[in-house]
Length: 462
Image (tube, rainbow, N blue to C red; front, side):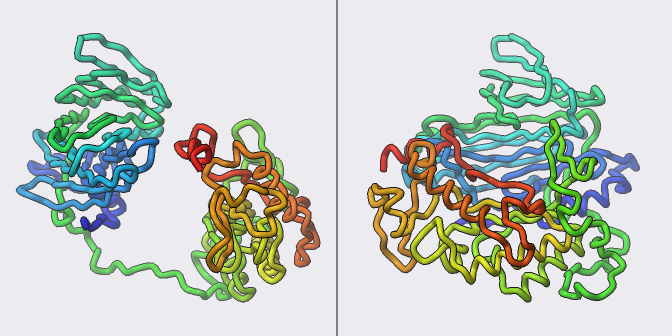
């Protein structure tokens, strides 16, 4: 099995280097390119991402291909490779890409995509991410194989660049031009990022796809093919790992807890006004983390430590995700129902929410993954539950199929009862119900699902 090897810290390291490193001949280069991982190449300008390229793919029905990738250096080139299995067919597919600097302003990617046997696909693409800081209100000039030309205003959203594109020019916010030359020409749809299609619909074992993409930047670029090529940083022998500990109650010269306005919600609720979140009459930014399953209801001493720790490092929001995805380790559900809660587990979550609030940390509630787990006591609400499975195993749960929520009023009622039961519950440590609690900033109704999602047909096949 192909192992993943990421160049941890490359981008942070290069950010420190690019302003001072001198290319051969004494000329400095603002642009730097390097393999960010075994499937991605980053182009930086003065240490910030200018644009990014990454090989990604989807099997039939948009099932994601999780390429396990690696990168190494060969004769001054970067060699990227990755492998994944198409779930629908069980067929391994892989890619190989050679990346090299071909002249002072150009890098070239030679990419091949192959399969062990014939398989259906949606796409394997080279994704092109265009950050707004570089390309705000920029343009793309597209030339197709028949000579037709068109200009597209950024951001791309879902406009796409068109079919049989042989060349396109990115014009950034400063008017500088980067040219992509494609051999052979490719179709390029977009969904935020441009997707240069390397393989689509069907990949035959005897017909691997190959292509070259030359990227000509507006200025000279320094290309690092491997970590070994990175120049030494002055004083790097004095660097040390930063390992934050549990010294939460001790004074700290870099502590940010005083930046956090505590308790959370003391000025009322966060409100939405247009595209902004407003708190106490001013825009607020939430910077936070995600906790899952039983971690949303820790033991009380740990709850205190975590709340102090988070505030110390400036965290002002925590998403409690999948806190009711099951019982025991999976969350606060009771032993037999998705809509009732285990008293001890709920008490721990109550205490944790109160601790977060007291330290100025808002809470986002996301009850489960989106595929609610039905308990034996819920059959009165979902009488056909056993069409989805059987109440077996230690958890005695049946998981509703992905996207079934959109077809079933009974499952919708189950979702509603679950969250309403929590909202009506009074937290003994705050004195407020969750519905009254201003520290609850967000309530997520359904996670990673829509009637247009790739899973939307699964309930009809159950």
